[in-house]
Image (cartoon, rainbow, N blue to C red; front, top):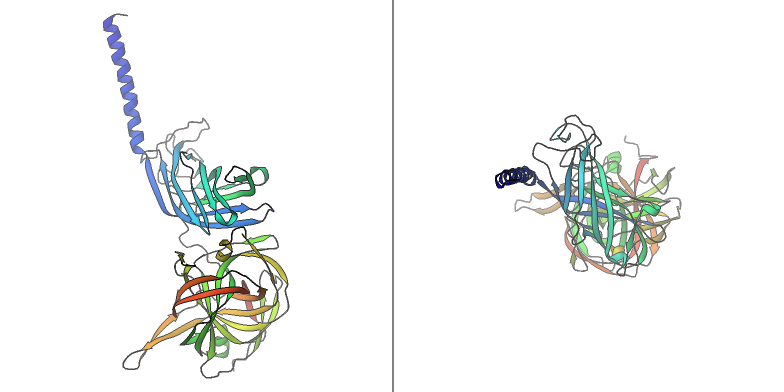
Length: 464
């Protein structure tokens, strides 16, 4: 080949290379980055005995989608469906004492592939087109689970799911599930098998906007001190409606503090809906010695699926939504309960239930090696109705009362609380905040365990 021809060939090759590089440049520039600051997740772990433990997680994540704004895609695997490559750039989730973070030096690659090809060369998924898509990421994560003595335990797995739009719609999730040999082994610091298995990991980039409300279980503690106070409240619940009476009560002292709790009973696992939910129980007394009309109610819950009749003897406590600010001097960052009712709690008696259950709250997680606590629930002790509350917070110079009101949000939700007599042996000092102010409390043993329940009156008082 002559020098001239070589020059022409070289120039042509250079032009081709230049054109190819230029054609790649828009794709590199077109990569879109999406940040999800309110990501949620669930981590499901089984212990060596096969018992399930679930961690509710929150945090942030970032995804890069390698496509133009028009949603250009290609069928790289010759299955007749267009896809675009993706990468999970960041994933940091924590909660309930668990932490998930990326393994250093690893990339978390994935893709989005349409489920039907309406427009060739375009990802048929809103906002680029119409349809749905399957998405996955191969993730390499590290887990810290101090309560299980697991630190920097590595797990490699694929999370996948179907999305209806990109970014994913609120509540849409990608997940990994595994059982038996497909569950992920969690290794200790020397790469030894700890016996713990990761059986499920859920990642929700965008949390549900209005998730369906569900009342939590509560694990309630006696206190070493019972701070006294003198406040006046007006309470009106379903019994008050039946009796046509707005009860006026003096709030006297704090008797119990309740954490949200997980529960395993009969092979069923009941998780925590909102870890911000806590209740402080205040002893109440009628200001004018108003008589309570005793009655019977029929309740149904997981302990008594066929129902049981309880004898309601009289009002005893006001359970108030409470922010748990600190535990043993450590900030919780849970915030104040946003959707939890006040409850008026009554002394009751009824048939024994004798149920062996496994429960877990935040205090249990502070004890290494004690992921769940085995307790025995016996007799029903309290029935709690959601209640309307007016709190008199002060008086003006003219003698006009200033008030604070709390409406009933969930009139069907009740709690039946069962006697628990087990010494805890681990004191926790907590700082709390609610409408009655800030309190510093020290918890001791368990007193009762409260179960979401349905209720109807058997012999309501005549209304005249």
